Image (cartoon, rainbow, N blue to C red; front, top):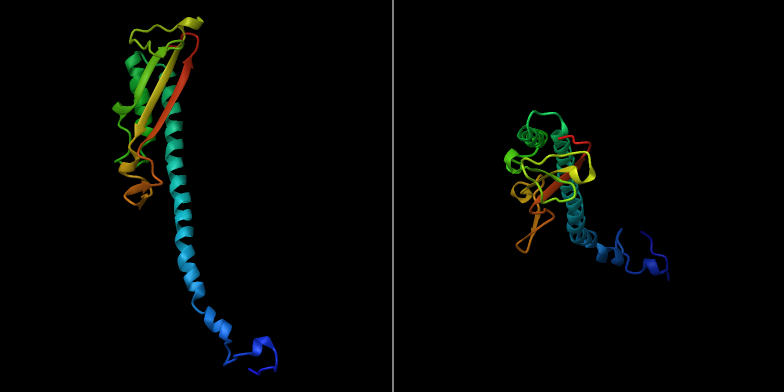
Amino acid sequence: MVAIPNHPSSLHTVGPFTARARLQRGVYALEWAIIFPVFFMLLYAIISYGLTFLVRESMQRVAEDGARAVLQYHPTRDARVEAAQAMVAKKMQWLPAAIRPNPNSVNVRICKAMDANDCASNLACGMLLHERCMVHLDFSIHYAASPLVPGLRLMDMEVLNPETLFASASILVDRGGL
């Protein structure tokens, strides 16, 4: 390299590197070492939240399907409840066994539309407004027991994964359908 007299870039020229370039060596690696964990945690959070959201939305869809299963014809009310519980268990088979809901943990109630506490087993549903019924179905899973993506642990705290996921659905039974 040829030094040009009185040019600022030619000062302290030794071989192909200037003094300024020599001082910058290793800075990019240092910057990458500082920024990489932030980018990695951001990407991990996006993936973890996305899979948790997938499980939660699947649970909601299954809860709605289970509530609709109660409306299908079955000879007894208990058979309707069992059909809803079986529907939830069948559609949640893709989850790991540790967090899959047990059919008995699916809570199905048939109550008066005007009074959610009136859920007697011999409840008669009719066509008039005060006789109408609602089907309520809910269940939860202990997601932290076996999440699809392990959460990050920071200072003895689980980050990104909720402890429990909950889903519920309600359907109005119209025209004395039960």
